[in-house]
Length: 426
Image 1 (cartoon, rainbow, N blue to C red):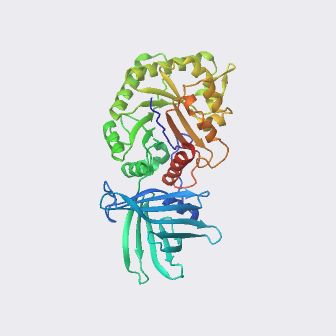
Image 2: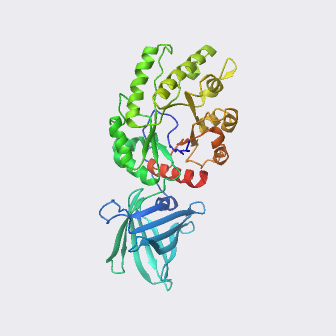
Image 3: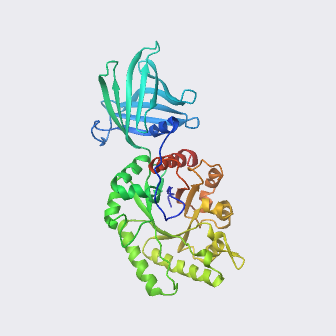
């Protein structure tokens, strides 16, 4: 089966979704908004893009995010793209300003210096190598995937104006769990999905299924909204824990309705987790859960879906001397029940995920990859080593979670995409 890499950036738990008013305060971090692959819009008044945009721009991070290597290409009459401009734009920690140096195809070099007056407003003053002012360029970020640039001469007359739309690649099939941007989705789901698609995400996973809907949309409506943004609706976290695990009527009624709703939405898998493990005292109770998960997994398989169990830390508690997670792995049918290992919670639970991948190969169809800070920033989790075991684990969908945000959620998930794409999936 073709591997699908799936990224999701989510909070530690699925309750209490109020998000703080995060900001991007430093010049260095504000500059990171300009990183990525960009294409020009049809004109500055719209964010629509042509099949063959006039301009393509690559802006790649260097040296611990202190600078960007920027290459600008322009389309010719045969729809081929040729170099137009090459420059380095970086943050100077000594002066706390943004500095640039570059040249065009005629070999004319320039330097530039400027600052972000706010998160969204950035100005650079360009000079020739004799120190003469040549042009001022204003950058106005409409959002994290849309920026308008305008050049002015020394008399403040506009020379040109263009609009760049982010167009990061999707070839590594990275996805996102929408709990990461929950408030944004509640406020404007269509606009949020458009930004995520531009950031490079290929898939989404939800956690909000209720009464047959997703964010107030029917399954078909939400599927269409996701696909309009250039992504797929891949998976859904669902939560149903009947008191009587042997009541097949209740179980089949709820899950059959849920499965049919998700088939209309086009998802590939349903996942679930268990928040009641601390209350389990006997092996008999563990077996009841195992039997229940087997029932649900069988229903899913019969309907062309996969059923996935997601862990937190409590799975690594012991019941009658047996680790809960091991019991589930050993007593669920691999044909019906897959596992989604949350590597952050595994570490919190005191285990090494790699040991589980080795001991239970091919059982972990999906990973949740989360850190104590922004993804890859804490240094406490060796993600690069974990990713060496992707094939052994059987991971097809890789999801990333963020414990705490340092920045606005949409900016944070763009950084998460960069980390997965450039650092972990080389």
